[in-house]
Length: 444
Image 1: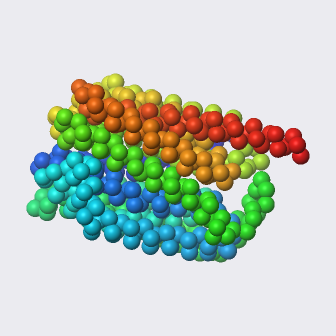
Image 2 (image 1 turned 180 degrees about the vertical axis):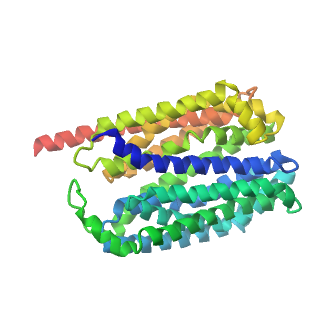
Image 3 (image 1 turned 45 degrees about the vertical axis):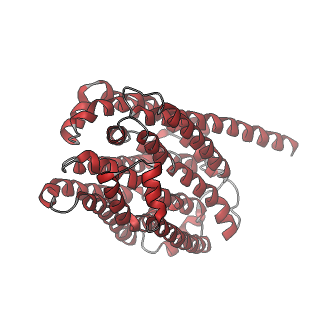
């Protein structure tokens, strides 16, 4: 197997993730044009991170659809399962938003107060519908990935980015609307634009997936796929839900640690802006697990070729981060594109500089995730995330006690530590599984 098919498959997914991250950076750019931008950037970062906690159970619908759907029966069962999952997620989020629990988390855990607290409450309530729309989008994108049409996902993301860009251009003219409402509406309506393009495009490009799925029965598979049951779906997605929930704890944990620093508003906003800008080069790697899932089952698929491709991808994005952190490019983007407040530019640059080693950590982790998903051993993915979040919690709160000159680095040190710990765990798990498989084969 050559690199070209992997590159052709991965590029639209990577481009989509990059555009999503650029869009998130545009959100900060828009909020940076309001009065008291550090208030709204901090409040938006906190509210969004809490919303993602409840979005996390349905964040793996793409992988569930693309992995488990092989015929009409499995398609129907996955669709019904996903519907009930969306309903349960929405109910849990509603209870959190409209109960005293959200206020306690914002004030006691996140250490918010005054205008920042008030803005975060408004944004959180506006974002109630976000997990529902996100789940529907993920479901349709799973269909597109299954039918090898990821270019449409890229198109919908471009539409979302264009919409946000226009919103940012006119945000000064609608400044009479409270900044907290603008932040929430900008985020929610952008998702609706993306969802609309995905739904309409799927109908045009694929037609009826129920009919189209019959053509996929001719695909080559390493072994016969057993009939899908709801128990099988739960055993597959259950660990991924746990993993997604644990992963979504990362940002609130980081924000909580940043909130304990001497200057929490500066730490929160500098980390959000710097990490967001650097994530333009990290987010594409989050799709790499689709490579082992999609190509290890091909006749010529090998671990070595996938690993070589992953290393090249990581090196490319690490180089771009280095250019942003160690040349004038990063400062230029912060000052002229994002228009970040002057007091957070240096701390944000520090965040970007430390992030240069992260692409290699992420690509290794994504490789192991893909292999485990391909082998339907997703329980190890969730175990790895448990190790990750425990390390993150300890590292962040230890770093927050160091009184660093750049308080935003508290989050960076925590993220690097937890990623490194997780890939070490996954390495030993993978080594153990391969050894066990070899022993079973020799016995047979």
